[in-house]
Amino acid sequence: MAQGRFFFTDTIAYDRAAVEQHVMVEGMAGHLAALDAAFAALATFDATSTEAALRSTADARGVKPASLIHAVRVATTGKSVSPGLFDVLALVGRNEVHARLRAAELAAHSRY
Image (tube, rainbow, N blue to C red):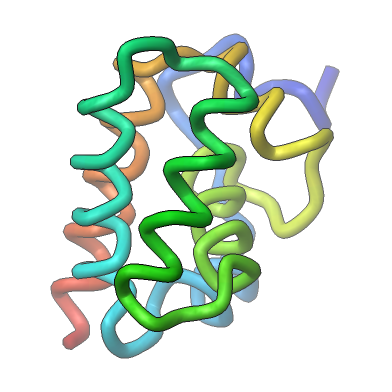
């Protein structure tokens, strides 16, 4: 249950090292805000559409998709390792993903 706790709670236990490495980096607040907007515009919030939105956002912002994947995983699960990210996003749901991305964006923005 501990590894999947993020599915069942609004309070995420964050791995501090993962946050430092993947979220608290220069420019990530803007990347997360852009991705959050892309997710909000999706007609369907499923694994396929969220993956396409993330990859498109990464391309538009000139960053590697992996940097967004890792940051979103940490923002959504609190950990650097999880089940498949896009499946996690679909299961967590659009509204909760938005809330978690917004919290990560604000945290990253507080540093840069």
